[in-house]
Length: 473
Ligand code: SF4
Ligand code: SF4
Image (cartoon, rainbow, N blue to C red):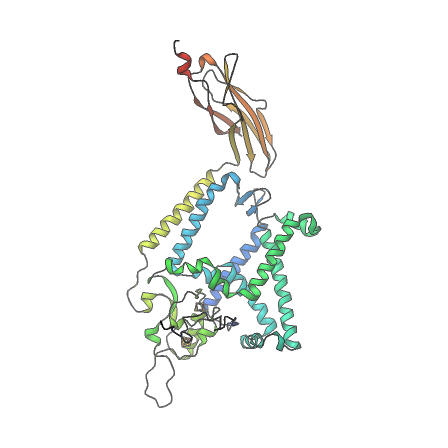
């Protein structure tokens, strides 16, 4: 019979936020002050402000960034893309993913601690409200551990006040999120009318409100620990030279405080556990690098404040590589960093190039269904339909011109075209050539002039087999 190891005493064998029965252990990190927390708060303010303000910024008559689902368009800082530009997503995904991989290879989960929307909103919007209504972390923990059946009137009052503000926050965040999919004026229109008139958007609003509320009221750190795929990939992306938040065990151990008149020697860690108390995922960083660490740096500030009081150098817990924490030589540039950097820059560079060179008017020439060509009265004719899409927020005027070799004639019912902003148009055109001048299939060039700037459209002209025609019977 194999023996089953009892790992109940091993802190690395289970999550700090889940007890032995699978129940949730409430985590209420102690507040901390220090240089890292103030840097983080400025960064949170920047990201939150950008996120809230971006839908208000207009460039060329469009929102600076909007995924306009209703009209199947993406507006990105003055450029507009439609469903036909979906292929560019390849560069968006590769560029973003490899840039994030490079960041992880350099500094682990720094994105999670400093810039992830989940962390920014939890730490900047929800946690302060909780502290305001429910008091200090110890009181909050006690209240949660009691369970709602034991709550008195004061507990209920505090909880209900907190949940009410959480609900308002979630409702506001849901509307801000929707502003990235429905333009602000449209959203404002919807808010003023009955939900039945725009029930799909209304259902999305309810879903997002519920998701924000559930996540920030209850799910919280579990998002980073069990759900986030980026967190799961960390062990693949990092190595011994990646900068992480870590504990210098060589300097800190053996931990503890010397008793009076004791000659026992201790390291710099006085085992005050302040680094554990401030951790939003409830881990003890002194147990080594753990996947639950989101790199928030709260434990650095906590430990530095203790070191200052103890008249010892700060940095017992610090941003350093695993090699650095073991006092070994460090390497900053490694092959994997170059690889991610190159792949990320290639993706972003390619995206920038195609975005800057994409036209504001998209034109496709499609052959009309039926026979590929017709021959009538010794004239070969091909029929096409131009699908023109104006991606701009202003009307455009276009002129259809041809640059055909001798013999070919363009028949277009409309040569001067007017397209309203963000509208499409379908225009039939025909190309003809006398059969005796037709020498074989050919690619012709159509010029669609937009303010003297031609958009060249290729037309493949097909006709009867010339060799067969010229054969002497
Ligand atoms: S805060 Fe610093 S001194 Fe206190 S337990 Fe953590 S590592 Fe040790
Ligand atoms: S171990 Fe330190 S850096 Fe990691 S999540 Fe906890 S407090 Fe933040």
